Every structure is written in structure tokens, then in C-alpha cells.
Length: 114
Image 1 (tube, rainbow, N blue to C red):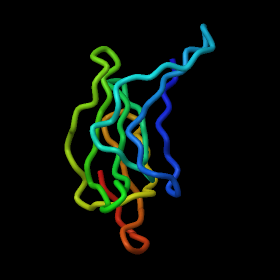
Image 2: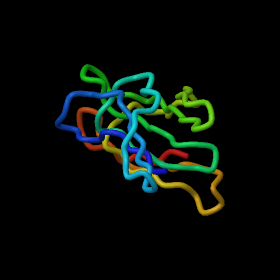
Image 3: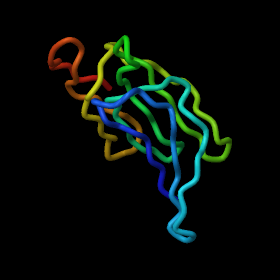
């Protein structure tokens, strides 16, 4: 299964998430994000999908949500130190950490967070 989260900084913030099943070739809705956002970053780890930062239409976000496929629910996890959108995010090779590089909050940022 593949999951899709809208991520277009020019669009209205959305909380919708869809999952694609290649076997049935169909899309289906799954639990929405707790906070509608745009300009977010998304990474996957063995314990779920992480939605990182973004913009909710009025403020930049430092919140991070994790999707649990078994529970079909998004849960808030540790927030970033800086509120930002359009950050680059990667997972460490040992699958233990998420790194967030740069981003935007009323200007370009040069931060790196783990």
C-alpha cells in the first residue's frame, strides 16, 4: 500500500490522506491529519509515516504527527525546535532518526534538526 498526503505550498492547507492499493488499483481515504497543513515534509519509518511541519494558513508549524496504519490514526509526537514549512527531511540509515534541513518561516532558514 502507498499513502499520499497533499503537499502543495500554493494550495489551501488540507488534512486529507489517501492510500493507494496497487493490487486493487484503487485509492481510499484514511484518517485525516490532526492539523490541516501545506508545505509539509513526509518520511516513513518502520513504525509509521511522519508528517513534519508545514503551514496551516495562518502560522508555520513545528508539530509532527505519526500515522499508525494498524490503528488508522495520527498521533502527535515530539515537535521540532523551529516552526517551518518546505523543509527537507530524511531518515538516518539506521532508521532511528529524522533529520530536518532548512525550511521557510518568513524567510529561508539554515537550521538542521534531529
